[in-house]
Image 1: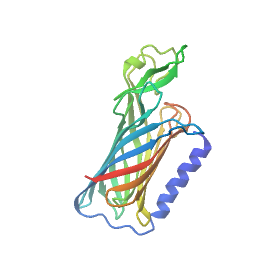
Image 2 (image 1 turned 180 degrees about the vertical axis):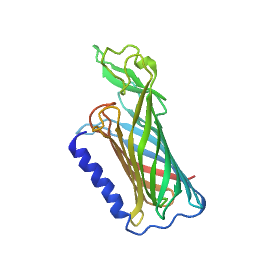
Image 3 (image 1 turned 60 degrees about the vertical axis):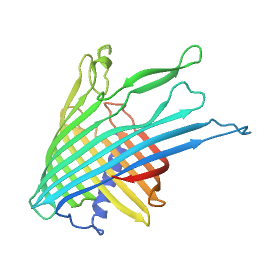
Image 4 (image 1 turned 120 degrees about the vertical axis):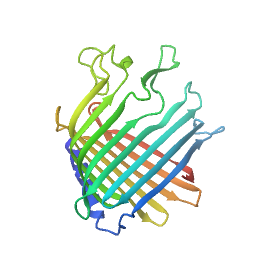
Length: 294
């Protein structure tokens, strides 16, 4: 992993720890449920525009749902994240995905001090629909090649460790023993050349087993009136292969509430996984959203 990513990881984690000293309420006993569905819309239209331009429209549906339980020293926190979006650009043959994500995080902890608990972690990541790599043929027509689909890849992670929790909006989990399995379809690996890999999986295989350590953190706070920021950080190091290459996944989401039903939403995700691409991946989504409490 590039040293600048080490620095960024430490900076983000340090920021969460520092912000933990600020106001934050104690966990409430019993069940607590909350969630939001958001439909984001982006559109551009041109007519005889001198500088040129291409008509386009994109829609993205996002679901963020939390289920929290706390009683007698037991804490169980589960978060579901789902998003899917498509864009149409005038002149293109195919619709293109702007967003596609399924993620489930579940943490179970038993307190042994005021803030610390023994913990078990479960994490699942995949996507809803097929993903393509786009190009052009010799005639200049747009082509697409299947690259991914549901459960290919899929990431399943289990870990045991320690859970520090200030509130439902602020916690850090450290799992020095964490197992991660990458699952893929053999249709993508059966024809791989020797030495080549598909998301870290070799020729003819359908999974990759890793055993390592992970750190996960979450912090949500109100930056100012009607503006909420959510930070999610995930780090993973594989003991069995190149432990110095730390996988990095950081998402920051800003929700700017206009009224009860309408908001402006900005989400930025930075991912580094040498098994997938080997360089920093960046995803950014911005749009006007219609909100529905779940």
